Length: 195
Image 1 (spheres, rainbow, N blue to C red):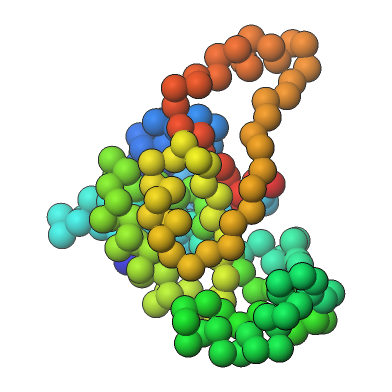
Image 2: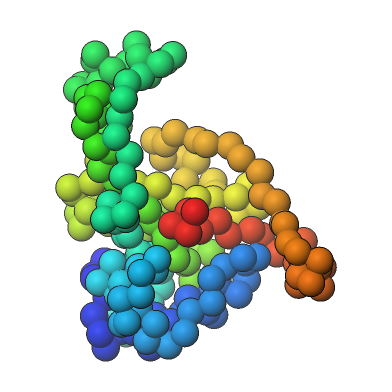
């Protein structure tokens, strides 16, 4: 896995658009849009690429740290996590990060704009396996995956905490034609970095 460079920008945009069009609600990417450092969008250097021996992109995702404008401060724990907190320093022994102490900021990034060529589970596992080597300073990362996403089982077989929600389409009367164009046959892509 390697960090994206300026010369990867066009191929990255093309790969995201080609692979992303197979999903409902995947963001459309303009060529070189990640070079502009637009607020509310990951920068090119946030992207990591898994490439073939020939240099073709096989999987990618932005390790988007939004701490400059979005922080989560741990106030305390309740329920199961309250019981777990005192012994959480031992969690790394079983593949889970230790819980931050009350008063500490939660350090994490959001895996955004992630796609895998042809939704290949082996490629996705290889991509996910590379995350600790390049993002070792983050004990957590957030990734959104809908129940219809073909790679959801890969994520479910890893240590995780699930958050259940619902996807709604909402719009003003003049937006109804666009809402009617939602294709229920496409799997849903959740971009948690845009929430």
